[in-house]
Amino acid sequence: MSQTLATSYDDRHLERAIELAQAARGHTSPNPLVGCVVVKNGRTIGEGFHEAAGRPHAERAALAACTEDPSGAT
Image 1 (tube, one colour):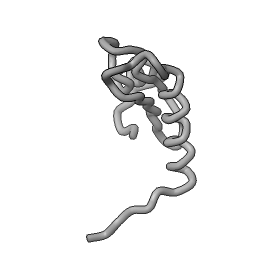
Image 2 (spheres, rainbow, N blue to C red; image 1 turned 135 degrees about the horizontal axis):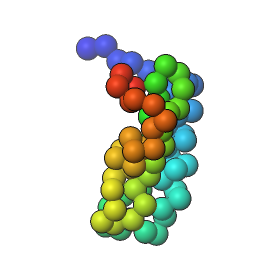
Image 3 (cartoon, one colour; image 1 turned 30 degrees about the vertical axis):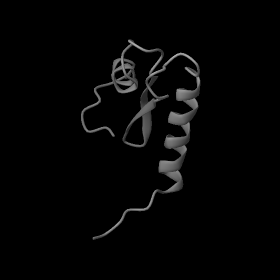
């Protein structure tokens, strides 16, 4: 089975997602801290985080914040 290693490009986006998640520290229990970055063609087109328990998930918030159609994005 082959493995794909994260690149510094991936790491940058993962670090941003973690940074976004930290904004909700103390407000999401019993849910975890979660951040999300939507990237398309090498550009960030949306970001979001799970703000508080009972609020939309990070992915939904990031998709709602997209500045363009997220089709084909990661």
